[in-house]
Image (cartoon, rainbow, N blue to C red; front, side, top):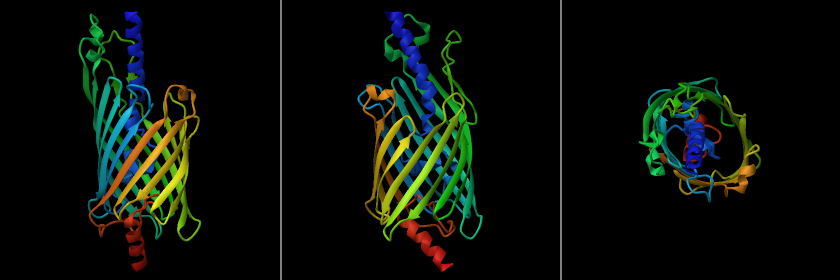
Length: 322
């Protein structure tokens, strides 16, 4: 029985590591609220500094299910330059992983109506596995905890107008191998490169209403292609509600509201539609977004089409003046 428990724990930890790229492969349903996590070229595109805090709880109802806390900050830092910082903490069972990354972007006006930006991401992940808390004795594999730091980098390009955006990026360019504590252990996991392609368009359907549509594709070696399709209604740049589907995995309902000119909050519930629905009650996601300071005079003439706050109006006014 003891050996069976030990083997089960090893399998669980290996699976956790295999999925621990969740920080750079966010399972966030409202991924456009934290877009700089997957594409550093997005940094600074709002024209002012934006702080975003996100809490996501998965596998609700199951002890030790994944929980992620995220804080990101990005904004303009000079003519055509954007900077960003993200801190993400992942907890799954006995695994804790904290990721810290800095972003740099450079944007140019591709035409009178479009902006294109290029970005680089650099940082690393602090990994801790509390093996001793499992209480497995007389086994060298579980005799002490695992602690390590793994550096990584990413890159991306981001093109947008007032209505349309297209994004391509890759993260985890340095493929790090995890859990090589004992060469006697067969189970291990590596952080593979992840490629993202995303696009979206905003339709004006009435004076106060807009239809926001977007799609996201994720590709990683050894895993099936994953894609999200989303559509939402935005009323008066103040209230948003919609649906999203991660094909063959989940269906989500999303809601966002702007409480003040510079403060927005959001909530999402994901209902699992795969076989895992028999073992959990879905996922909850909460987001708080805060604009800081004033729009930079060096900011682009426009903001990304899915970003809606006071700065969107400010950007439109700058275009009209020119």
